Image 1 (tube, rainbow, N blue to C red):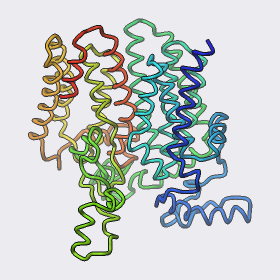
Image 2 (image 1 turned 45 degrees about the vertical axis):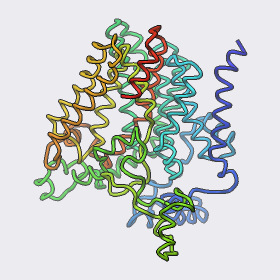
Image 3 (image 1 turned 90 degrees about the vertical axis):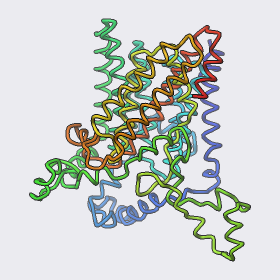
Length: 502
């Protein structure tokens, strides 16, 4: 019993902890990230800290926060209230080095989630590392976006709680849910929490469908009640900070415009952001492929090519040949040509998870797989924002995954099934893209969400929806791999090879 616990839990945890320290080891040596956002925040907070040192209390106004805003938006008296004992312990364990500690918490959370879902230790570790090494998550830590990190890396604990409740493991589920909600609410990033809630809702919908099909409604209602109670506890732990945020939002641009001409021009402006502003930083259609292919639409808006290409690159030699000694331009080259006005990195998750997902398709999909699949597809469409498809095209696109699946199932005894399924999906997507190539002026899925989805018009940057793909694509990939390995079909290797080729 002890050896089993050591092998399946303690050793993986030790491995993840060691990797977390090694990954950010320069931080222990005194190096720090040169993130402009963090530098600006320090500049904004500095006068507040000086006043606090002199008086013992924070002032209510931050003069350096844009043109002046309430100080509680960036600093508050109740610092650290939401951190449970475990979060504090993890911080001490890693010497209060935040990048390593939050990196480890994300790793551990997704590992626990996959283990509860039924994955072996090996596959759970593979999934956890695949999740945490999603390029946006690592870039997020380097950019010192601590609020985003707190929220997103707390979500796996809520997902693990859902899986525990589904198996009627009430005690572990309750603890995991409390930890997860506390981190999500305490992260102070409503937009990330909104997107994370969409992932949680997709899993919850799958369990609801399963409860309805199996007539196990009572355990499901108990789990739903526990989830609501733990979410309420997480919100109450930060109520002193949430209520001022909510109050201030009514008087900000997210509270709508009071100008009559704006309301006549665009009725939605009475309650939320300007439609054009809300759709800024949309992902272009080609940008969706960065989930599978890194730098498909280039790199960043200011990329250091000297560092990336090295001192012996042909580009640097060309500069030297033409007598250009100043390499400052090469240290901030705009190599990004996607849909957003600025980009600091891609949303690469990894092609391997897509291939594993396709493998799972060959052997049937359960209700959870279908719901996660269509949740992912809807999120991809929402991330397009201003570059999205017309509603008629979006409706047709929603039939593509099912059509590809039916083709794959029909041709399963034959070798080309994965290739044909991939062809149906990609061919249909390409045809719709050609027929609906000019999204400007069309009423899109994003417009529908801005008009009718609660609180959706409070946020901008639709491309940020892609942060959820680390949860969805990796989770579906692991489920597909486990279903594939459970088969005794002798053609598995051939199927795998053809799927990868497709």
